[in-house]
Length: 90
Picture (cartoon, rainbow, N blue to C red):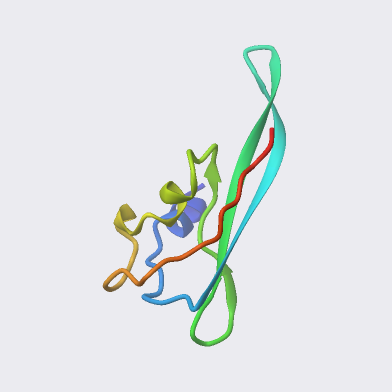
């Protein structure tokens, strides 16, 4: 588990020229009930051209939470962010 915590708190690059947002809906048992929960998986292509997973958010309330530069891992000034409209269906 220490390796997972290290990965979660690792510093991110200053710039990712390309960012992909993907979601995976999983069935999770909670209190004896099976519910569908979205996992948001943003990945980015760094300036060296390597694609890396930036994080995993369970039930992110929206793209703002996933793209928030205030999570403390950004290494420089926040870059401009744009993304098209998207929605998840449960």
